[in-house]
Image (cartoon, rainbow, N blue to C red):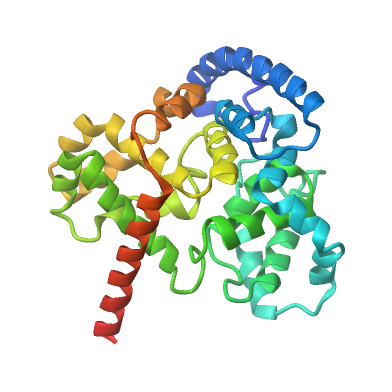
Length: 336
């Protein structure tokens, strides 16, 4: 049982009073999908107890990982399990060391702002996920001193802790995301994030040229409408079950998944976007297109992200990243 219909709090601890009827209808249908996927994953893992990347596992990941297996699959496919096993005791050593006072203070400020409506993160919750979140962010800040702590990381760590219920696993999954899958998203200059916002603009020129023409009227628009999508990896932007399905693929396939999601949202809602007549219209539209049944029905949405944008080779993204990064750095040098 996944517990979708038991209360107005979903299985992840979030209250859903505002869209409960739509959520219940979609989740009642989705529970049948989950039950089928659970049986198929169980059968697969009987044959292959250790999750290794191959075409079968890739197909299974794209169709959805049962929540009870998510921690195991994420750890294996992201390389986090291998890193954990290669450095036994490392996470604990980070917590036992002398801590930077400014890092501690900065993290403390954001802990109570992280999912305040989630029952697992409320201060009186017995699960103590606030403490686990603090520990993971503190350890990561010392592990990666170039990044330290940056706003947005708390939401990502919070989602991971909800799934893993394990600080050390959450730490190593953060390491995989921020160190390998999304390098330079959270560095002081945020060069990776700024680069990928421009890459999205270039991809929209190819995949939705009419939208690109509209957006060209507003310089810097992609940093306005897409920065939260990327820096929070769609957390608090899309419904949680949809975000977790995206992350299933993100840990397996890498960062091109975030572009597939963005392009699908844009292409699917192209008529509405094209009706925008001002910068304010555009910004409001990009908020609206992340809501509603299209994004709530995570199973159909995930099928769309691998069909709607068409071919999207990693080589294309890498080439665009190189060009966009060079452009950003050249502009910075000219302004210096």
